[in-house]
Length: 100
Image (cartoon, rainbow, N blue to C red; front, side):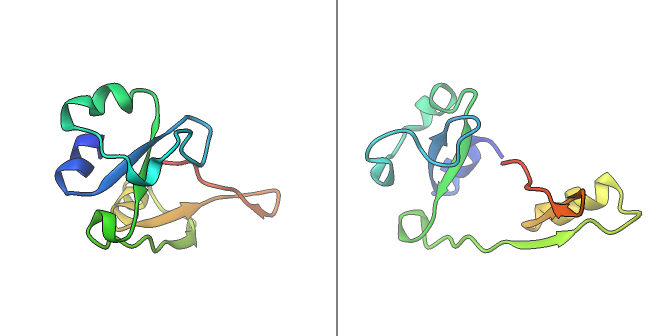
């Protein structure tokens, strides 16, 4: 989804610098970008979703599962469209997924 898609749903978003997990700006909980500024503000950045009342009571609830043997990329994409994040194993440890 693009920043505009989130904006049109009424969800509050904040830019997250690449490689970071938190907003770099001060006052981000109250950040309200205008639609015409989204492309500039989110260029090269990840999208952080401000959950709770500010976004119409959106809740972040993730379901994690290991990728079953034989699963295709299309299968994985379909699961991810429902909010189910997949992970792979590396040297016996669960690898962390990248931010989407």
